[in-house]
Length: 229
Image (tube, rainbow, N blue to C red; front, side, top):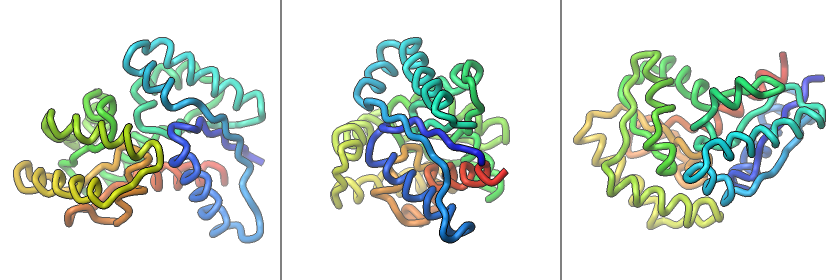
């Protein structure tokens, strides 16, 4: 049976969410059974420090995890965080097992839905790096981000609250307000929840009356589909 490996802990709340969603999706197709999963849990604070200060070190940090998963019998793996995909191409090229990209999975769904101009929310690293615009650009889909001051606010709340499992109505309302402003000023037609903690605070299928791409849900669906092949 095919075994899935998850590079987890990025952060812990979203890893728990991944695990639950994978189990639920599997059981909807295979009642009475459970999928084979191996999880290697990393330190999200160390990972974020490496992203900001030592990109080669970050690549090695994730590759070490993937090698542990492969040694534990994983046939393919996933990075359970959007920010980790900042160096996905290099990591995938050196990985001993295939990786399923959350960004490519989300881009396919945006194209399927006919979305052409989306706002990206996530950590500062995710919002300011080119990996989302580059992948979506292959399908002629434009990705924009909030203005610099709002990016800083989103990043601060993401790292200071969401990553430690704190979800408040005040933060939720301001996230919705940011999207609404961009909807009106930039003509966006969708929202990328580009952080795996974001669906835990913005759980609706719509955000400020726009379709929301839940990157966790899309990634999970792709992983469960791969488990069945």
